[in-house]
Length: 352
Image 1 (cartoon, one colour):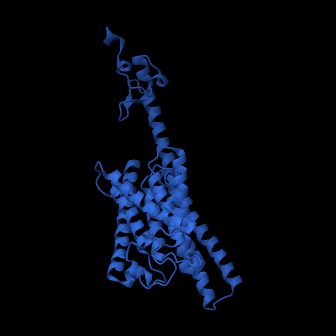
Image 2 (cartoon, rainbow, N blue to C red):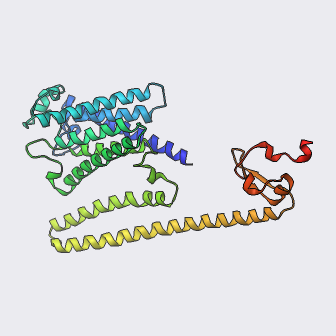
Image 3 (cartoon, rainbow, N blue to C red):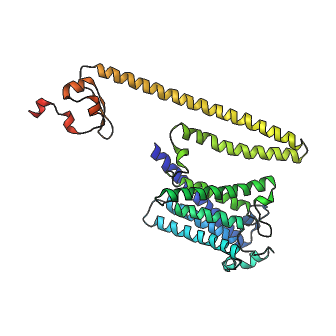
């Protein structure tokens, strides 16, 4: 069952990568055909730069080749190549910002179209986009490294990249431009932030045994609680924050009243959510205890039987050995359980 869940989440990661790839290609098509709503995802205040779309397309393609397509020998190498290209573009952009040296590659795509924006460095992706994409590309490149250091570093890269873009989206939602724009430079487009978040989640899901995702997929109570609590919690927090800001903006209440209502709503909603989760987990534990009690009663009944009763698991190891088996074969349950040596099932008269 665990294996099936891991296969499903890796498939989801590949599908998310494909969607991000198609969305990035649509932005590039918008630049080619000068279609404004494709470049800005509707009537957004900022266009996605062609280089940003190229990076996102590379990272989406990396996930498609490694997780979305049927496995073939060169798939991982092709995906790695796309990830290297996308990360190189993002890192080179950060070098331009940090050193003040123009490398010129940001004018390689649709130079005339991007120059109409009137911003300094019109073809260069926004600083926040460059940081987030560098971190995302680094995480993709680190995800198959077999070391705890690489696992930790990749997880941190994903978390930081996701937080940068989540704050950018919240800036658009709540009207806080400083969350998605560095003064004097271009802004992170809202669909850039959204696609990076999609790719961050997809990259994490593509390696379900890594430390960032494994607790959420665990079959125990902790994994169940994480899966049930985290998604609705994030959605409720964002929605309640917007409602509180909207009510204040139209004069329904002042800041103090809105804050008090918001905190009260948090307590009520999260208390209700945790109550439902706790009840579900308690019922699951009750079913587990009942099944264990039934198993123990069955084992006690078998142990009282005069005949030898031996039960093997799917791999042929002994997991049940009653008193009758001990009398017949001469081994105690402690000596027999867990072994699958055929010599255990040989009686003295069979040897003679």
